[in-house]
Length: 336
Image (cartoon, rainbow, N blue to C red; front, side):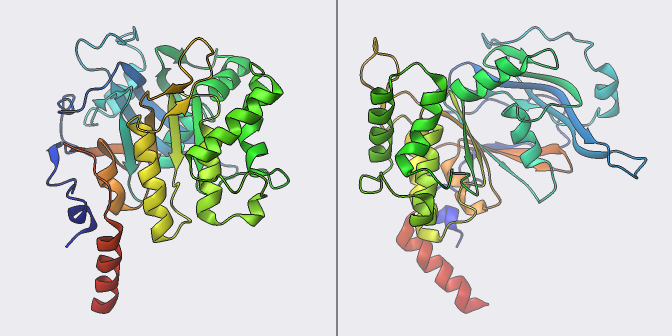
């Protein structure tokens, strides 16, 4: 009995399609859940690194395509002959549909397969060696200024890391408040009030003044999520957010992320002209090694050797039943 079957959402049983690496056309769209326009589009993205003392480059990404579906209003005008040499070198690669607004996409695969490299490129922390990246309808390339990329990361993209990356000398509310202070559109009082409200929403009402060292791993990750939401991002990038957590906290964090994705958490609005609380769904892209968490996603992309191998599509997102989860883990322990 698998954990995904406990959640009634095994990717094999709840997927409308699993697309193998031999596919030569864009896979069919996801069913049932309605998404917005494409917010992440990649064309023939490659990434390689030159290492001192080695004549050959280390290739992290070979040919990654996330392309808009036919009729998508966000279809960008990339030239058809762009990076033609790359396309010819990877004629058997699998293009996947672009990531659309409101989607929850997981990226899975073996260590060293290119997952984190891909996430860093999506977050503009790194840049591709070849190919094109479009975020929110805008092309990102070497001509993009550092100022523009910093603004993008500050205002439109939220980051959640496995190791939390909280500032050790700042309290929980100060860590959450910091991105708003840097952005500078709210007063100090407004920043503090919003930071406390976000901490309330992630269940840390009694931890405002605690330093990271005074918080559990699960509590630190909740602070990280609240900080990522501080400037009302359109996209959340998550790199192994449950990798350092126990089973209870893993389920709690995933339930929280699902609620954020589905717009079930009434996030406070930054815009005074809008209602004080917004139920807008948030786009999530999450890297994980844990197959048990696939039931939370709309779609799972499998990356191996720097390329997409297949995808699985969940007809419905599901939460894990924690009691059955523990029962499953205990049964596995007795069988070994």
